[in-house]
Length: 437
View (cartoon, rainbow, N blue to C red):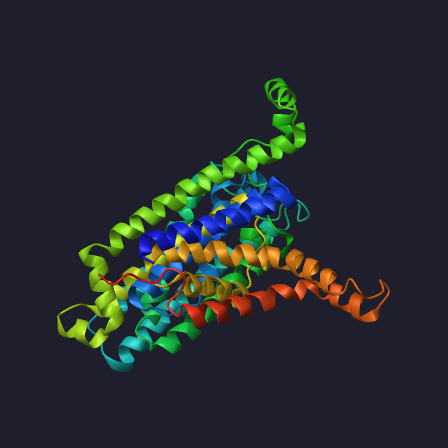
């Protein structure tokens, strides 16, 4: 089967699966799963840029997704005026000191011309002194901010800007942090890089969980604004009531579906834009260079390519895409929940999306995002139906039947394992393998 026909057939099968869910479980459920699949596909594209293009083994994706969610809070949440008045000056002063410390430490390391222990000692002194001064400003300010109506606020809030703007800012924030991380860790061997990025991801999420002044920590930030209408506003609209009544639709159900379709339109536009740019990059001379580095770093370096610089570039780009997806996920949820980011669990899922879809192929990464998230969500109801069918001959109070029904939630783990094994057995390079050009 040629690649184009393969793409059409597999995506058509995916469309049929959504059609089946819509007809059996309701279109509200089907469109919600579709929206989550789009976000998963964008995250898979980000990982595919790192791994499929350049062979960069990073497992810190959840940290960058969390940074995208943080950007949604900073950009779109309403500012807490009292917190800014009490602690804002201290936070700003601490941030300025931190930036100056970074600049001075860079200057002492690179520009003073010192060597050996002198350079290390001077730079360490600058860093420690800067941290001490920063804490003198920031710590009292943080305590004051967290004491401002802790039940409802206890943090600075954001800038109150449109939340779609946070998608761009989420990418920029994730990309900026990735640049800092990459400057330190990209010289490591592949397995050490994976461990380092996982550890850094855990650190990022730990900070977001416990820095209440920034994210409210485990109390979560709720009520983030929407880029689409609210259901209640549609229900109260005379025009929408007339439109839904004229078609025999339930007004509340129609409003819920319309809102989700609006999200779908926004998310699809982002997915198409990222896919277009990714395809252009992959087919460009830059893309060919990245694949050459992936296939043989030694040969690429011998041809005069700066491997570490290119790795840094692709690491930043992939992380920025994951950050955009993280901001979109927070937008869909309408709240920022730091405890929901579980690096070991969801990073594994993203990697499975890329592997099953076909690493190095953007269409494959998107398909993998749809397939894996669809079955991750639907594995439990499908598993419950299978268990009930297989145990239909047993009495309803049978201990075996009750135990199996109560264990239906674990079917998603079995499903992921079966999917991975079957695809790797019959299509080792993924459902849509990378095309050799």
